[in-house]
Image (cartoon, rainbow, N blue to C red):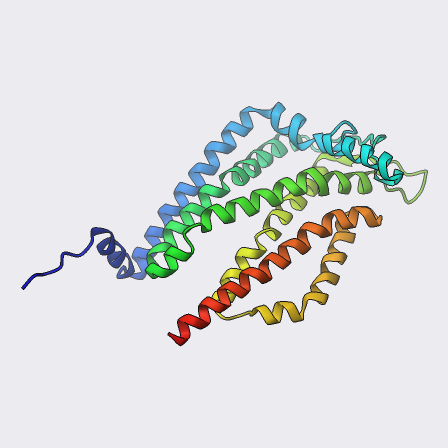
Length: 281
């Protein structure tokens, strides 16, 4: 009687599924170590390129000559909304701690290392969870690493080139009185840029989150459509918080966020239909 020879890949997958709890922890530890090592390598490169990281990237949005600020001024001329133009921004950043600049240099290097290494980190996470998935699940989510990386980096770039300049202009030029002068600490400036940029990058992962929540049955397309109005209000509030108090700036931020939500509904519909067919079958 002919005996079917099992596929080596399937054997490896089965062996991973049969690993003990401590073996899983050991496997996870090595994935984390490789991810941390990748972050450290990129962080070291960023640390050695101080002028590029700070003068050209981190501190650039505070300058009136930053590409977004110049484009907004041109747009302001076309539509006659002078509030959009950022042409007189003179933000002075000071350091008030002896080790402030060095610690900031170290911090930003690690942040840059993490952001750039995100695709690799996601890939390592994917390698860890893949053996626990069925063949169909692996097939349908084979592009997860690419999609997650693309969405996060797109959110980071969108925030850096649009939300960060608008936020810096508003907060940096806001005065409660003419007798009070803004002298922004280096730590405050860096915290604002990093938190806004990273937060938007995470928010752009909404379609991926919706995919998995729909896959496990926590949310449905009808639930998302039913709460669309509430979501729009929440997005408008968030846009009002992170942008200057003018309608046009809020719209610039709202459009991609609303687009992501609509895309998430479409994804949820497809996943829900596929899940229903699997359950019926």
